[in-house]
Length: 412
Ligand SMILES: Cc1cc2nc3c(=O)[nH]c(=O)nc-3n(C[C@H](O)[C@H](O)[C@H](O)COP(=O)(O)OP(=O)(O)OC[C@H]3O[C@@H](n4cnc5c(N)ncnc54)[C@H](O)[C@@H]3O)c2cc1C
Image 1 (cartoon, protein in one colour):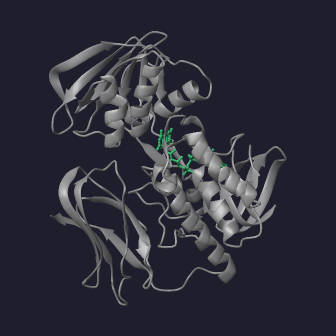
Image 2: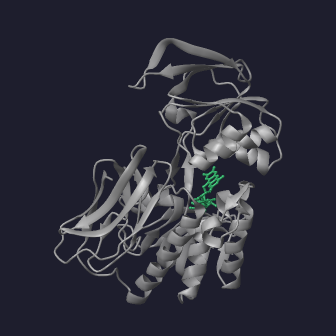
Image 3: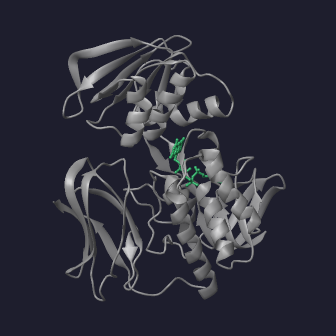
């Protein structure tokens, strides 16, 4: 197989990137998707609320993905489903396994759009027995929404990420009793709108600074111990409660899917878990671009699509030029209170969109992007939380000779 642009992953990022690459003039655009259906994780997100930014209307996940699938098909993108990319090299050669067997492919540019995966019980090491009835929120969502299978009756949710909050409501609507959501941090991990719409509207309690310290049960989960945590995150002696339940749902974080990027030798950021990219969303490997949740975990899919389209335009510019855009790279440095910033480098003269997350909730702050003594972007925020991605467009480019771009948070 030979493609101008090979897109790995046929979720909303991959589909938007592929359609945009064709619109920008790429001839042969190939999407490689391991599942039988393109659409990514949105195929199991049957609630609405997607697309408010992009289309100004609330869509379900499959409806949102469907719009991009149609756009990709209408623009003549080749979508190979049931095709898993097993290997990627720095020379942009790929090895795939699909209905036609094991095949090699070569591409002028590659776009990484493999999404993210969930942290599991092993990652947070909850002690106790190993009974049935412990699910990650995404797997629970898959069973309920795609397989029409109920996963349990008395459920405790660990972690307050968005998928867990959505599942608290979904399980309640399906007749389960969701006892509580426990969160080790002093604030919710998911969006404020999901705390209100998925917990408060259904009287599901959220216990902050609490965690599960033990899971017990013979065949199936029978009970869990929940402990209150002190400011240092240690269980407070005597402040434990045992809950009888048959199901534990974990919503304890998402990690960009980056095995292929690592394998190809791309530099990976310890801050995001995704590839280190410049202002053109190109990784440290020339001609390999990254977008969507494979690059950094996004809050809204609308922003995933926008970022993917930008990656695609840059990938088309790369294949036209045959080499990466020239220019010195200016590092972007997150200052205190900023958890991460994407991109990691800028070239002088560029004014990319900057995405960032703060390290903890704060109110009445101003975020400034500065370089060479100049303010490139600034905005005031009444409230900032780690759950909500901040996006800023630079109103001017970094001046020539700037050594770094600093992103900082100041009072007011
Ligand atoms: C479990 C879960 C539930 C979510 N629920 C919500 C929600 O309710 N509301 C909301 O706003 N957002 C939700 N999100 C976030 C939303 O799904 C994302 O914003 C969006 O789907 C990200 O798009 P993506 O294309 O980057 O990734 P994905 O949608 O994950 O798509 C990635 C695609 O890449 C494919 N892939 C991965 N590796 C390979 C490979 N090696 N070869 C071939 N194909 C590969 C996967 O099969 C998948 O189809 C959820 C995310 C997760 C993980």
